[in-house]
Amino acid sequence: MEIKLFDKRNIEELAWESFSNGQEAKAYLLPLIQEGTQAFIDNLIAEVSVLAAGKTLLPIVKPQRKTKIPNSYIASNITQYFHYSQEEILNNAKYSPFLKRLSKLAFPPVISLAKAMGFEDVVFINNWLLSSNLAPQLDLQLLPDIKACLTKHFPNSALVFKGVTEATDQQLKVSLESIGFASVVSRQVYVMKPETKKYKKKRPWVTDKKLWEKAKEEGMEWSQIQLLCNGDAALTNQYYTELYLEKYSYFNPQYTTGYIELAQKAGILTFHQLKEKGKILAVQAFSEVNGVLTTPFIGYKQDEPLEKGLYRIMNMRLMDEAIQKGLVLNMSSGASKFKKARAGEASFEYNMTYSCHLPFYTRFIWQIMLFFSEKYIKPSMIKYEV
Image (tube, rainbow, N blue to C red; front, top):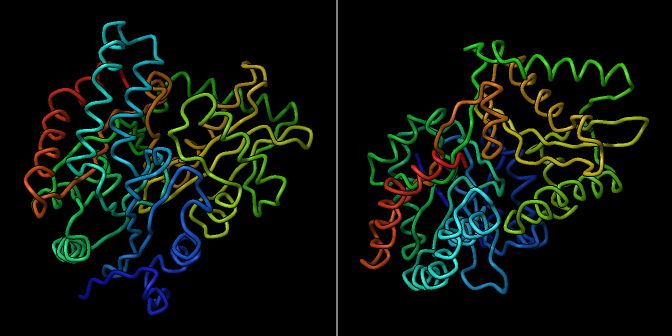
């Protein structure tokens, strides 16, 4: 079966309708290819192309190496492993003063060295430009041909297959490892499997449901947003910005209102809202792929009283969606105690990386990352629950 790459030069030749996810992929990826990523994500400059593999279309993202500001971590190894990590260490009280001082001294020269050795010269496979990229239904026998096609088109770049999670994608992980891909840890995520029914034994699940029942009695409403009008899209983006960027990190993707409208119209994300007396208090997006559900986008009114429990209610609605549909729930990373108390079980997510076709010094930096991944990054993620 032919594996073919389509980019700006030949995208008109792609018969989108021939693929299982063709309609959604066309509506979402074509604007990114034609208008550029920065029209939709302020802190991301990258070239997007499409790989036709069997009955599935996969987004291929090649970030620009030299930018005025760092690219978002969703498409930058330097940002994910160095900028973001340093920021986490410096801003979090659970890290020791010694580690904070060490990070200030060590990170700048390490970043410069990593850039010089080609660590940022990568091509991301299955990167939908979301914080959680769920693995698609893919014929695993095609993986060697996918590797051959991409190393031919990008002979100077490492290949990174995004979002491979042990708990849900073990077969994909093993298949990639069998053809030379290395498992470099990306994040520690939390996964809830409804069939185990462990959530029923968790008291927070019961109390969250009671909170929601009380909120409904007081007039709160939950619904899917069929079509975001301009004002609602702007408010959705405002809530996201206040939470993900202002509260956490500007290395997170800085989505525009245009991106939110694009993702909804394409069906990549379905948006839901909590309303009270006609006012939107919270918004979250669901992404469902190949039997797995996640929410890569969430935001809520920051000045609402904590006892209102907006985040708890949204998480309960997300869990309920997974339970009702029989879907595995990828709860993403962070808030470990909260998620474990609601039946989330820790699982490592990997950037599956192939660099065997590259010069020695680039292969070497990836070997170092693989070593640190197993020796230090994974143990530290377990220890600090990040």
